[in-house]
Image (cartoon, rainbow over all chains, first blue to last red; front, side, top):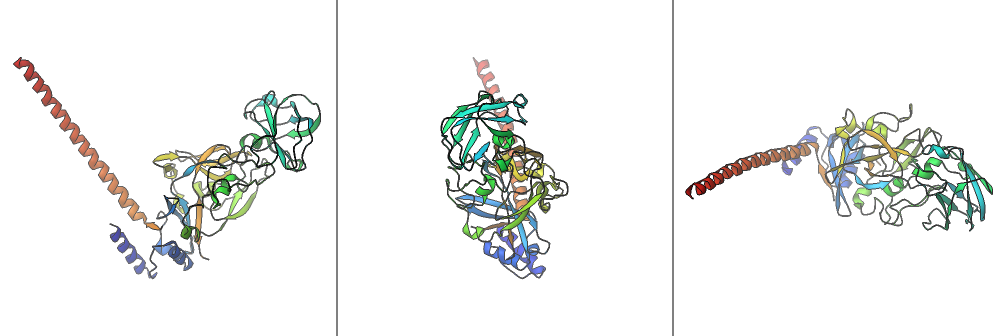
Length: 363
Length: 53
C-alpha cells in the first residue's frame, strides 16, 4: 500500500513539473519550502511525524503559504494536561517588607462578594527579604477573613517563611487596595490572578514549557514579580527536550500576534516570536476575541470546520485543548476548545491539554 | 525519525479500518447467531434427556 501512494505522489509531482525532492526527511521538507514548492508537495490535511522521547508525534499540516514557502503544523493529538499559570502572588516586595502589622482593602472580589469593601489585616513576625511575596491561601470563592496568607522569600521559593491568619481590621501599615486590574506599579497584583493565575500568554508557564529543551526542574523561571512556580515545575521536561533534533532544526521561529485582556493588561495586541506556540481563537475558529484584533488568520484546515472537526484526542479519549487567547474581559480566563469542539474558557490554574503549532518556512 | 502520511493514505486507512470493523461486526453477529443456535440445540438436548428420564 505504501508503494502505491509513493508512486501516486511521485507521479503527481512529476506531472506538475515540480522536480523531485524525496519527502523522506525533515531536511527535505525544508528544501521544499525553500524552493517555494510546498503547494506542489503537500496538501492541507497531510501529516508528518517525528518522535519525542519514544512517543510518535503526528503533526497535521493546517496551513500552506500561498507562495509555497511555508507550512504550518499543529499537533494532531494533545499533550498531557498542564496548568497555564500558577496562582500568583497578591503582593510583591522588590525591596522587602519589615515585620509588623499590615492591612489592605478588598475593593474588588469577583468571586466572593462578601469581602468587597472589607479591610483585612495580618501580622508578619518575620521580615520578607527583597524579592519576596505574599500569597493568599483561601479558595477563590471563600472569604479571606479567618483564612491564611503566606510569605515567601522569592518567586521560586516553595516553602513559606510563615503563614498568618487574616482578620477584619485596619491595624498597622496600609498595603493598598485589591482590584481586578491590580496596581503593578505599586507591586499589587490583580485579585483575579492572585486566585486563579494569569491569562497573559507571553508571561505564561505554558509558553515557557513549549519552548524549552531543559529537563524537569530547569524549565520555568518567573516572568513577573507576581509569578509563582507552576504545579509541573519539578516533574515535567520542556517540550523540545527529547524531540527529534532534525525536526527541531527545521522549525522556523514564528512571529505571531496575541491580544491582551482589557482588564489588567490594557487590551490591544502584541507580537512575539517562538518556535512553538499555542494556536489562537482566530486561527482555529476564525472569530476574533477582540473586535478588530485578529490573532493571525484562520488555518485552512479549520475553514468550514464543524465542532466535531475540532475535537482532539489523546490515547483515544477526547481532550480539551488550550488556546493562547485570553478571554478579553478577565485577567485569569484562557480560551480553549472543549471535548465537543466548542469554544470555552477556563482558569489559568486549571490543567488542560495542549497542542503546539509551529512552522517550517523558507530561510 | 520522519514519516509522511498523505491525506489519501489517511482516508484509505480509515476506510480499511471501517471495513475491518464492519467485517468484525458481521462476524460477531454471525457468532451470536451460531451461539444462539447452539443454545437452542443444548436446550433441545436437555429436553431430550429429561424426556428420556
